[in-house]
Image (cartoon, rainbow, N blue to C red; front, side, top):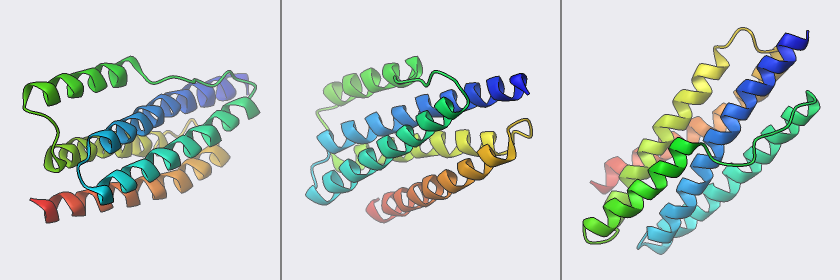
Length: 151
């Protein structure tokens, strides 16, 4: 049973990092969006991802674990790369911002899907992740629609 708890904490902490990457990515997208509509959408998404992060952190605590509270190193590096790329390409525009947001949505959706297929996770954790995944998938699909409409 201890191994199950440790595995659940490890998986949840990995999702916390990815969800924090997403929240920070949305925050950065809001800062770079030219359209008020996109800025508002991205700010709301950043808030929702932070709410999800807090829920996942609580789940880790329920297993007696110490929840992650920071982005992954890869996420931090990506944010710096996007900042540099934006500076070198003449500044942000909504098309570039939406493309980056969709790329990030692809990453988080794939990560949640992988975790949902982890048969070593307790069923109650997979059930909670399934609920979170529905929100992630809906957000992904909406951003994909926006991207295809915008181009």
